[in-house]
Image (tube, rainbow, N blue to C red):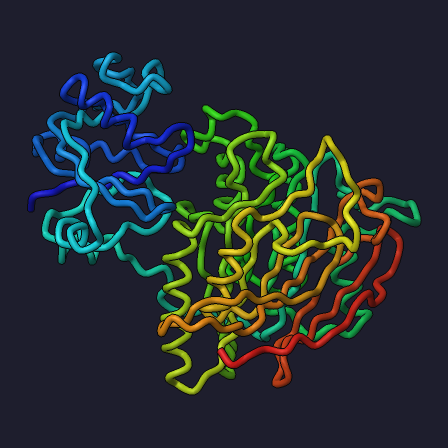
Length: 484
């Protein structure tokens, strides 16, 4: 079977296609580097197969802008040992990376933009997921099967439709609870002990799912991740849950974006990806995932886990960004799954989880020239897409203040008419265990949420507590849920 490749790219540092086209016009060809993510396979056998097939027509796609290109590739340079190479011809390489090393280089003699129909004829479906290089059959029908993969196959069983929401744990230097019990009144309980005792004290129903919405560590330190792993294992044991019944997303303190060149390979994600592998006991997990849970009595919960730590510099690390190019295929899968469940008379609950907030959380923001007012930069697009897909609720953290609100955006329907669709409810989890000096004046305690799915809606209970301070109710409200 003959093969070709699809390379995914984004215009992070330059207008990628115009820059390469300019070199092609001057030199007859341009070298296009594979900016392989550190988490991706080296695909040496696939590169060898593709190199033997040259010259070959390959696909280039910017999923963020939904722009698609066909390129004529005459040569591929790579190291059979899997190392990185400098450009074979620096004068045929864009200046912004001609002195850097990459795992593979593609010599392109032409780049032509094509429409969706032509793309589908050549390559099948747009590739989904996080990788940047996809080797596919040249037959579009076979390519479609490979690229349009399914994210979920069957549900994970849970004993109850109850979500325990934790956020902003900050294991490491800013962690406020003892790692081991001490003979001090305020330090006698570890966090997992305090949560178990608090839930029992307030008469909480059995928890079915634990959701942790980012900032698991203080500064992405290895010690912090190891402490968090120990906590999670103990907490799941106390709640009689398994790692499969856990949803984790990263926060800006877990993936430190402070070097623009590091983010070419997304090496900053390595500590968090290693943490995911340890917690879940398997590798290859993507940072954007769709979890499907179901109770014995047929209550389905779909949880869309989103990575909002996407800006590429320290100056913008407080801001969140998810990216429609990454969450779009997952949201399509969620919508199709919800339609399938509805056809059987079921009413699934769909929830999205990310770290950064999508609405203002404090009543009044304190101006700070050193630390800008942060937000999820594509919050408007995200909210519009979530509400159209039937997602009822968004869970987040980030600002250490518990928050409950609702929002919706006017959008055009399939007939071009404007309408104000169903509201999306937003729940900010506050901080579960950060030190008191990292908390806002609006909430000088730690907090967590317990959300139970009932016939009337989502019963949201927020509890505040602190080392040595027992649970007490902070907020309680029933969030109305539209028919999924």
